[in-house]
Image 1 (tube, one colour):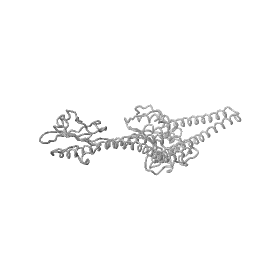
Image 2 (tube, rainbow, N blue to C red):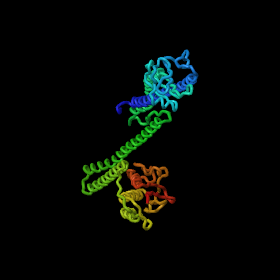
Image 3 (cartoon, helix red, strand yellow):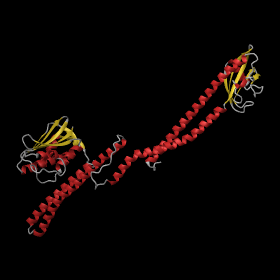
Image 4 (cartoon, helix red, strand yellow):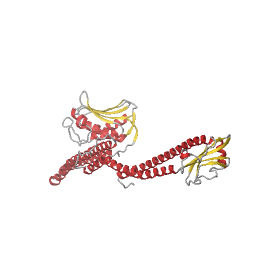
Length: 454
């Protein structure tokens, strides 16, 4: 069954259920008809028994003398009047032997008794009888009234044959209707499948046709279209990432190649060669840092950024980062300070947080001016790690895009760099369950901070 098309499987399941329903309905109708015929037969026997009981009470009345078959239909019904075990009167062609056994006769003397019999003398057909007590000339007798069941049996046989003919026809018609309805129901799915075959990376913007049926098919189509939109966005981000990475890698590679060629062709003294090697080393370092940043971003997007979580002291973390960059601040005659509340601790990966704060301090020293301050604070049950400077700040239109990859402002804090530093800061913050934010200070300068759960 698993290899069959859904349309055939639905039709087969519908046919099986329909067959069970038809079989149960036929059995129910057959049982009801049989019960109705049996009840009707018992009622006829009761009426006939009452009429014959009135008849036999009159002196000289005879069951055999029922003129014209008014009460007993010849060939279909019969009657006997029995005294203990002796037949007093009977309709032809019954013999002189009681049709009921002795114990049934004794039971009939106490109350009316219904019984089913096989063929009786003169009537080779099964029958049903009603026996009850009557009085004739002050003597208790048993009146037995019977009627063949041949008509009822023929009616049941005829009804059964009609069910056996009509049932398969109804099942065939219902299965055909189910097949057609299944096809109509699956037509939108087939339309979506055909459109899905045509969609590829070279046809952006294509979507599946969604029928306005307000059912599961419509919801499926809408969900698949949303998935296609997400995949398209992810593919576009990957393409942009590859293009931007290629562009960023091309510049330092070109500079490195130029420096090496100049050193080979025009380096005539050890000083010139040393200077060329120094510049080449700087470009190699830039390439290595860029490759490490790209690898970190790729691992983060795959959910593979590992964290070694430990209890981190905010004061020690800020002091470590400040100590690492203080020599750069001293070279440019700038002040690098840090401030954290005493005893402030939180859970996090110390090395990753040092990397994130290092990127922020590097940006502040590279693009900002004046004093640089690392500051820790708590707000709304969370820890905030700020890096502030006194430069010109971010261009207003750039603030909301500050943490996007390969994004650099047109002015203000413009300068060298691949535009990955803040993107890495955001990824590290999100890996900790937090976020990264940026704003311009009220008195000038930029304020970039990381929000972490405490």
